[in-house]
Image 1 (cartoon, one colour):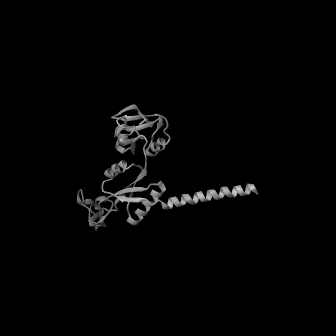
Image 2 (image 1 turned 90 degrees about the vertical axis):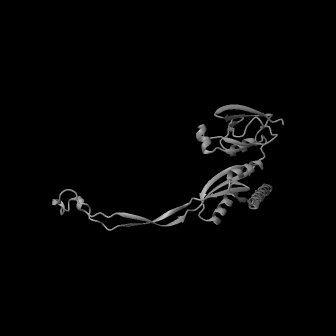
Image 3 (image 1 turned 60 degrees about the vertical axis):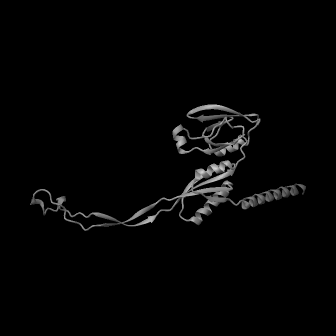
Length: 241
């Protein structure tokens, strides 16, 4: 009987815990912000203590449905803020294509074979003719970035590698230091645009890995392996600030 009561108590705690989690998810109301300049807004977000944790592009075929999708994905990521911009894809031309009436092909050679049906030069040939009839606007393309609040104890606020970073440096993993907080341990040691490859000998593949590794930092120093102007160098910061 006592064992049964204990089991019921555990189940009750689990159910209450799940209910609380569900309420937290429902209480999260992501803020969706439309901007003209994503890079400018991203810098503002870094300064406010946020880092991008996911980015996507998709075609906006319905604005209301797109807003609903962004909100659902923000909830999925646990992101309090989603920032997006739209880019016009221009328009396309709609053509009316039809077959012109066949014309008797030009007869080559002498006239002896002009009635020969086996002579390919005598077979009437039609031609396709296309004319533009109207223009239609293409759906805009949305670029969305989802942000997390991040209290960086090193003072480093990173971003994902761009395609240019990957191609220019011949790498596929790492993060770019975009902002170094004034007065932080990393100030003057790690520089903006440094590419962080490792932290305390752990590979840093993306922003998520940097945030997670930062939460486990212990001790008085943190060692980094960074790529600066094409050179891989080790640096060390003191956490005694």
